[in-house]
Amino acid sequence: MKSLKIIEVKSEIGAGTRGASLGPDAIRIAALDYGSNLFRVEKSSQVPVDNNILFDSQGSPYAKRIKGMVTLYEKIATEVSHTLKHNEFPLILAGDHSSAGGTIAGIKMAYPKQRLGVIWIDAHADLHSPYTTPSGNLHGMPLAVSLGEDNVQNKMNKPDKETVDLWNKLKKIGNISPKIEYRDIVYICLRDVEPEESYLLKKHHVKIFTTSEVRRNGVEKIARDALSHLSKCNLIYISFDVDSMDSSISKGTGTPVRNGITEKEAGSLCVRLIQNEKVCCFEIAEVNPTLDKENLMAENTFEILQRIVSQLTN
Image (cartoon, rainbow, N blue to C red; front, side):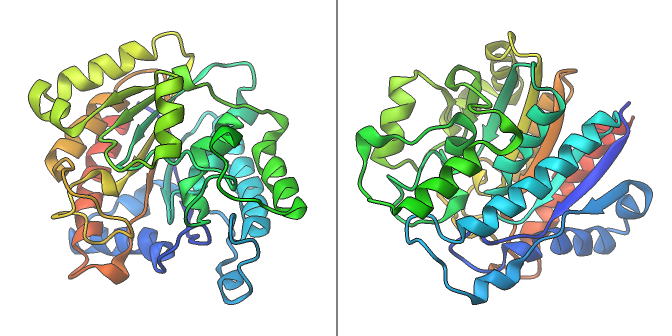
């Protein structure tokens, strides 16, 4: 049994599609519709965000709103570190997935000498940098930030000095860089990857479990093998992007992709993984109710969240 703290990060400055900042509230509404008192019972906090900068210039086309992201990462990292140091389990409900870089920074601030494993349940690799990004959206960069990865070997863009300086500052949040290593990452349901990211995945022999492997081998074996791969890590962080689920389910997210897992498979996978005693933090990202009908994405996500909370608190 762990003492939980729900941390809401209602930011979408790293996304290309508007609306992800409403995700945490959509999940709360789903809880109300289900008659759940989860948000009344569990301790919670909100990280201050600044979505108003969406109305300002995006700045660099290769790292949009990166100045605001540096500030956001500092706030997220401080909150996550504070939560962990108070022996609480951070359960993060985020808007866009860029926040994950701040979460990882916070874990490393709390445990700087611990080897951190990452289970990334996502359709996307999120390994771009300002040098390689096709979109400039920072929600495609959180793992590159955490790895201290520029990938200049596959350079496509020429970011200006200010952008490069801010990118380097982002990588060094918490005064630790790199924060994780490629050998300590496990991807589950990865299926939409750009060539620049594929280069890194192949170069570093990153562990990947495809959707077809989940179907063929079952959730139990995938979870067991993922945890086994990270057996030398002291701590494990799980990041769950809802676009890991199939696009027939995940319409309410900014980047849906075909051939994902079902809501039931996602829930069972997360519950099985979170049973491991090394898991120190869990994050859900990219619910976007403005793209949805009848809040279905948030309802599916809340059902998964409910199972996770039940596992952690019972």
